[in-house]
Image (cartoon, rainbow, N blue to C red):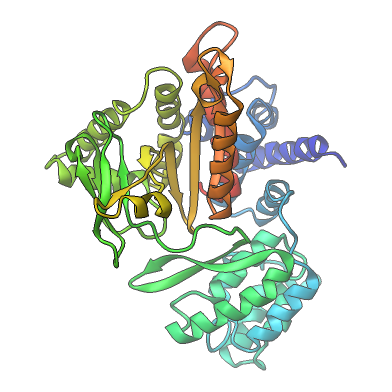
Length: 448
């Protein structure tokens, strides 16, 4: 079955579920809240189906998943997972069996939590074909001692964990690492053991957050990321380029030696990525602004001023136009004009002045899981000297990219000519380009 056929089948099923769930309800409510105009159709099913079909594939799947979650339609969620994760590795039955063996009788610490499992699997059907207690009833009996305690392997069989999509299995494993059910030492040891098992299928268990000082973990495809936490964030210069240097070479403390007033320095600790809301709150305090909305607008203008007119500014504006409302507080910060590189060889020549060699990138994003994304808008000066191609300049650029990738960064380049459309509208071209790119980027990094 082709990918297009699979998508068409899913949208037809979604249309039927919209019809059944929204009988007597204005179907416009769901889509209008998300800024999606309704398509035409002769029934609620076809209106929903045609509306979804009019959207880019990634956006259509996002909306079907949102609807499925609102309706707690596990089957529809799984259909979306299969299509969204088509290029992701599969967690094999063998690996799932090994995970069950490691968990033993302690799926959730000392036992199993039916209420947690019920949030992930449809357990409403009878345990014994057409009569008797439901699956959730049976699970409760084995969890409360009214029936012999089950081990994880038995639970997996009953709830369908051995055959569900890999993402749902990953969500089940994440509940096993929930800090409510395990102390820190047990949690950390389990995370290490599960990574050893899952990495054979291309997955890892990584800390991606904290709750009340306790770690939370996610199962995700192995992505190398950058070791350590970001420590120095110097960005958005609007005047003379800052000169950087060490204040303490032992602790790797970097300071701005000259022109500090022309750039911004984010001095707060950066934990699991950097969200736009965190940056806005820092700016609100930095500038002593009372209103958060005013701080958001003020910071946006200040960052925009650091960018060249044309593609750079249009890229920045298109990002916020298209994703602020959609992602809300989860929107990653798009940080412009960031100073990054430190070359030890050059620094050693200038040791008496303690100056750092630096290279400025157009945009940086710090995503959860130590993922650092570099975005470059390339004008002609990146590969030419005047009107003539410059192979040496191009070679230096790609060599720098290789170095960054080897250190765990992801580097994406956009050509200036991509910001043109047939009617000459830079904004239209930027919207189309930015929406398509970030929808795919966020899908890969499971942001949304």
